[in-house]
Length: 98
Figure (cartoon, rainbow, N blue to C red):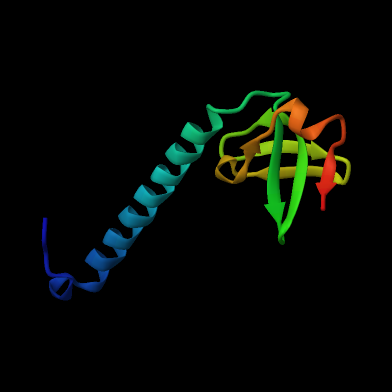
């Protein structure tokens, strides 16, 4: 599907922009939901923050993020950035791994 955006007037361009943004938000939400399906409350996970690996436990699954509890506090992280870790890999420590 090709069309010439140069032929669209201001109102048509604004409508096109609104529809593109709406579609991108929908796709982002759908992607987050698909990634969220891989996790359950209680799963041990890790993520990177400014180059540091942080480990914690999933406490809640939200629409676009997962709530993760660490020794340092609560984080809301998009599921795309989380990695499950086994209890054997992590031991009993939660928090920052250097």
